Image 1 (spheres, rainbow, N blue to C red):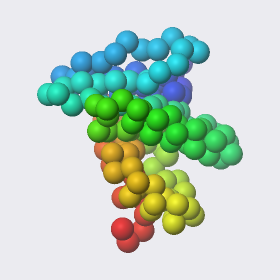
Image 2: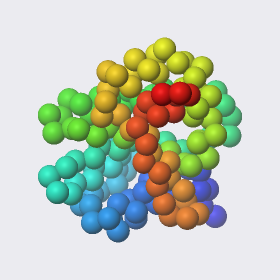
Image 3: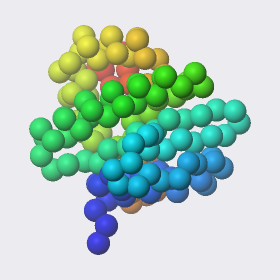
Length: 141
């Protein structure tokens, strides 16, 4: 049985959604291979997407999140990069406002420093994605 909160399930679901939106996609990376998880191209726009799953233990989720942040913004090395996206299961939606407001000053500075940084929430059950910007997770922002 597929774990809908895993990295792989999240990536495959998002790839399916993007294909339906007529994006051209890179091949899925093999386990242990480095590079951007998903590069989606359409209408002269490239999306650089890093995918993480949703682990049961909070400390593991935090570690994954901080790591994926750096992987996402490192895609700015490509001069074509205008969208650095962190994609994660929609289950993460509950914790994002807490995380953003716990790190309020840093979160806000990151939002201003990286206006191309987005967070996408992938719902495996409904096969939909909620596309948001980094800064929108702060209260009263």
